[in-house]
Structure formats: structure tokens, C-alpha cells
Image (cartoon, rainbow, N blue to C red; front, side, top):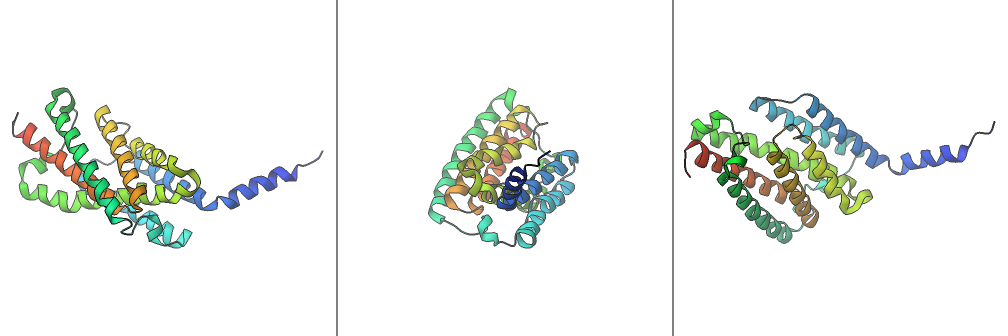
Length: 226
């Protein structure tokens, strides 16, 4: 019986040549698996889990496992002009989409928001400036920075679809309109990050879109404006 050492050598070379991407992919899937298996319902839990899973963990992987600069994963200003232009267009388009959803009863009934945010302006402000802002930044750093920039060299432009699919997977148990919004916004954010070489612009854009939707929900649903 002969053993084909050439195949074993090829397999070994493959893992050796793609060790960086395999490590990123494994860590990303691990985060998604943990988040998917252990869903959270309370705002405080969601805040801390998002910070740990989507920011601290990938930050540790980049710094101590990959030993690379954070700027390579989107934590830099990149191309400011492109970032600002594409972000403005992105926000404008999605604000219009949000408005259409809110004005359509069959669609807006699928949206949810915490009652505590609705009752108090100060709670709403605290939520948007601390919980929502930090959560959106963590998500951008993970999906557009860690996943997209981390795998871009091997996958190419297809990585935009990959990171959007992975993020959308987290919302697979949500109403279809939420899944659609997450999928489309993830694609848009990925495009902004690719063009600007930064996650800062897509982060601000995604947060503004989320903020506009929350305001519309409160104004048009809970305050009865038609």
C-alpha cells in the first residue's frame, strides 16, 4: 500500500498559506455561533455582549493572535471624501426607505422598540448616545473591519456579500422586513467601508439610519401621527 504524501503536503501548504484567513473565519463563526445560541432580550445584556463579542474579542485576536495593526482592519480615517459622500447618499436612501416602511401599516407593524425609550426623552437620549452608538460601532468593527477587511485579500469584492450574509444570519428569527433591512444596510455599509478603507463612516451612517427609524417609530406609531 502506497501513501500519497503529495496530497498531504498540498493540504498542509493550503492551511499554512491561508492560516491568517482561516483564523479570522473561525473566530468570526465562533462569535456568530455564541451570539446565535445565546440570544439576549434585555438592553443591558445586549450592550455588554455586543461590546465583548463584536469589539473586545476581535480586537484581542488582531493584536495578540494575528499581531497586525488595527488600521488594517478599518480603524483609520481612510479616504475622507469618499467616506463622507457615500455615507450621505446611503443615509438619505435609507431614511426614505424607513419612511416608506413607517407609512405602510403592514410593514410598520413588524417593527419593535423598547417601551422605556418611548416613555422618556432622557431614556431615549441615553439609549441612542451610549447603548446604540457603542453597539453599532462594535458591529461595524466586527463585520466591516474584522471580517470584511480581514478576508478581503483572499475573497476579493465577494467579501461584501459574505459579511452581509453573516450579519443577516443573526436576525434570521426576526420578521422578514427586519431581515431585508439588515441585509441591504450591511451591503451598503460594506461598500462604504471598501471605498473609504475605514469603518468610521459606515458606523456613523448605520447609527444615523437606526436613529431615524427609532424617531419615526415613536412619532408615527406611538404618538399616533399619520
